[in-house]
Amino acid sequence: MLDQVVKTIQNSTSAAVLTGAGISAESGVPTFRGQQGLWKKFRPEQLATMEAFLADQVVVWEWYNWRRQLISETRPNPGHFALRDLAELFNDFTLITQNVDNLHRLAGSVRVLELHGNIYRNKCADCDRQVAGQLEIVPDSLPICPACGGRIRPDVVWFGEMLPSDVIEEAYRVAERAEVFFSIGTSALVHPAASLPLIAKRRGATLIEINPERTPLSDYADFTFLANSGEILPELVSRLRAVSERKVRR
Ligand code: OAD
Image 1: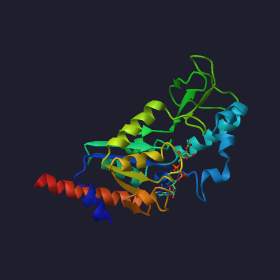
Image 2: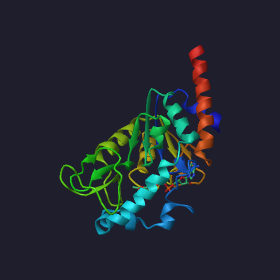
Image 3: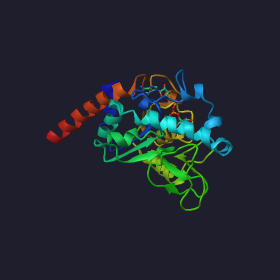
Image 4: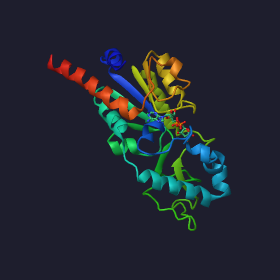
């Protein structure tokens, strides 16, 4: 099937990718759903909501400190690096991620739209200003916003919150113009992110899914690889690169 994909997309100039927690699974970052998923062990409404933060900032900060520590010990895997390289094969390429783990940037990807924020950033819960630097959060001495004195929180999207409007609007534009759209390592259950592949497909894009398990998107995908992204992506990039080098030589 890889060769068929290469044949189908080799002349496309614009591509977009949506990634979810699965792309980082091979780096050791836990996914949200599934047997080993985070939401099996923790209840989202107790940790990832504004209500939870207002009720008990210390508990929420302890959870984010734990996740920051866990994530800071991980490194990008071959799937992340392959996506960095994939960007070079298209004139117009955007990587849209639901992940907050920063691993795409660490791998060297440049044009990254972070739909759900970034776990290393903090912002003010009251005036929404980003707070520079990676604040060390000590739960018994919580920092306050230098501008308004408000409470500092992680700059990630919590349940019940809107996505940053500039980022999601740009993601819609990207999905609308993509000739090829990859959905990788996402259960495709959380909207609006999950609608992006369908928007692209409706506009005529070739939709390619990579996920060891089927998702609600699988029925709409032109190609579905039931496999780990760290295994398929490097192979796909290497075959696409070979084709593009042959074209240059001609
Ligand atoms: P999920 O945990 O819902 O789904 C992860 C997906 O990755 C599953 O479909 C797995 O089958 C797949 N997967 C596991 N290992 C993989 C591998 N090696 N290669 C490829 N795929 C693999 O995570 P998301 O879809 O990212 O939102 O979840 C979406 C959002 O739900 C998250 O961003 C988070 C959560 O609530 C917020 O926190 C706002």
